[in-house]
Image (tube, rainbow, N blue to C red; front, side, top):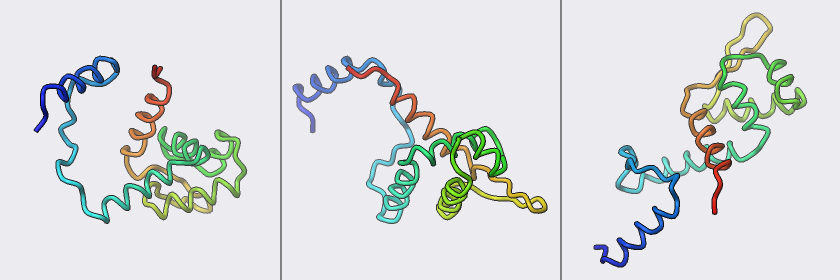
Length: 128
């Protein structure tokens, strides 16, 4: 149970950070998830921990595209892009469809794009 000093400290911390939302997050689990969920979530964050993969995922967040288009838009080498896409496919973050000899990559869903956009917003906020 929180005492009044704890509540004051929490309010003061919140007041010092005006960018913190007043709306509570409703979908945050109240219990710590199981080990498998925590491990998979950590793997997701590891996948997002490289600038190259973030660039690739940002390109894919605009819609399906080819490897050569990803290479062009990110200025990364084709072998590096292919290596990252293989890892991202293995983590079920991107999917590939073949059209003839061409591979078209896309995000599996929009969750990853939302995570990246939220993280970039956080990174560009002024923290005092």
